[in-house]
Structure formats: C-alpha cells, structure tokens
Length: 276
Ligand code: NAP
Image (cartoon, rainbow, N blue to C red):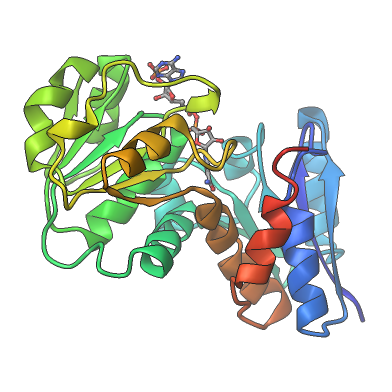
C-alpha cells in the first residue's frame, strides 16, 4: 500500500516541501506520496480525524497551524513544547504525535557546511526573538557551551524568550551589538530582516572577530545582505537553505522508514525554485 504524507498550511502553494520529499521518494524508489494540502483553520479538527483514521503516515505543519495543532495532537514531545511549535506529525496506531525538527535542521545545516562550528564553547548572538529564534536557542543550548545573547528590535520579546528557556542567555536591544561583537564566535540572524531587500543598518561586521561564523536562516534571497557583507569582511558564512533541507530529514525517516540524504543535487533543485 502506498505510504502517504503531506504538508498542511493555509495558503500552501508556496511550499517547497513536496519537491524535497518527492525527490527523496524517487531517489529511494519508494512507493509513497507527499502532497501539499490547503487546510483552513476551521477544518483542522476534521483533518486530524482523517489522520486518526490512518489515511496518512504523517506530515508537516506550516503557517498558520504550528501552534494550533498542539491541542489536537495525542502527544507532543518535550522539544516541541520548549520551542512552542509543532512542524512534524507522525501517526502510529491511530494516534497523532507532534514534534519539531527545526532545531535539527539548524544543527544539520551548520554541521554539514561548517563542521567545526561547535568545537569548544563559543559565545553566540541570535538576532530576532520570534518562533525560529526559539528553535535556534534550543539548538545552541544543546550543542554550544558558550553564552547566547539574543538581540531583538523589541527588547521585551527577547527577554521573554531568554526567561522561558533555561541557560546562559541574555536579552539585548540592537544598540548592544558593538559592545558584544568582539567576543562573538557565531552570529545567527533569525529575524525577517534580509527578506525583500531589507538590511541591518546598525551591524558593523568589522567589530566581529575574523574567526566568527555568520549564518542567516532567511533563504530568500539565498545570499542575504548580511551574508554578502560578512563575506566581504572575510568571515565564514552559511546560508539558510540547508536548514530547510535538513529539517525535512527526520520526518521522511519516520514516515517512509528510510533516512534520506541532503545532496548537492537536491539543494540545486530547490535553489532553482527560489526566484519563482
Ligand atoms: P516571527 O516569529 O514572525 O519573528 C520575526 C522576528 O523578526 C521578530 O524577532 C521580529 O522582531 C523581527 N523583525 C521583523 N521585522 C523586523 C524589522 N523590520 N526590524 C527588526 N526586526 C524585525 O518569524 P519566524 O517564524 O521566527 O521566522 C523568521 C524568519 O526565519 C522568516 O524569514 C522565516 O522565513 C525564516 N525561517 C527560516 C527557516 C529555515 O528553514 N531556513 C525556518 C524557520 C523560519 P519583534 O519581536 O520586534 O517584532
């Protein structure tokens, strides 16, 4: 019997997940399908009934459902609770289990593209304090021994984030960048700055150590102004597309029973869709 998986959202047409999972299904010769399904918020409970009836092995959840599915899942793991969002569902024996794979996507991307990034404790700076910042903070808590400074436009949102997740974390406004920069080994942009030509006008790359790694989880455009500037200053950079690809790995493995590989060919296929 064909094993079926999905991504649900509203709207959903923009999702690149069908191309990612479709590529892996074909590469592995599996009898499976992965479809994008537009589910309006009011229809979410009905969709969960289809899940419990066994129509799908599981799937991904995207905007605007990442928080709403909490109440509908039969179980949600500790990780998704800490991050505050579910992006992956796995159905077993009529029960729907929710998890979050964004933190694994973030780690997988850095491990693949900057393998020594977590050697030794490294003080890090996260810019932004939204949903994605939570996943990155959880990831750094697990893998990076240093302090993490969260810089955000709205200081109160950064403060709320560091208060909720236990660790050597502190909250700052953007004006603290210059003071913190000389001690930073890793800069992660999780804010939406970088999309649609927006840029940081306060971020002076020359204040960062020459060994610093700069990564942006925004991947449209692939080379954000932040990454372009970091490169111009001779700093190492990792773009955000790999996070999208790596976060898809655990879901595919759970639904289809094969751990897929993020290959340069897969990346090229997705990259080709970014301007569309
Ligand atoms: P979110 O929850 O809406 O948070 C947005 C963050 O950006 C907040 O910290 C917000 O600051 C800040 N921000 C927005 N506009 C700003 C501006 N004009 N100036 C300064 N700060 C601004 O969004 P999210 O879910 O965390 O996602 C953030 C970005 O990450 C999106 O571009 C998303 O596409 C990307 N993302 C990528 C991946 C991946 O796989 N690569 C995964 C998840 C998300 P305030 O608190 O002050 O509002």
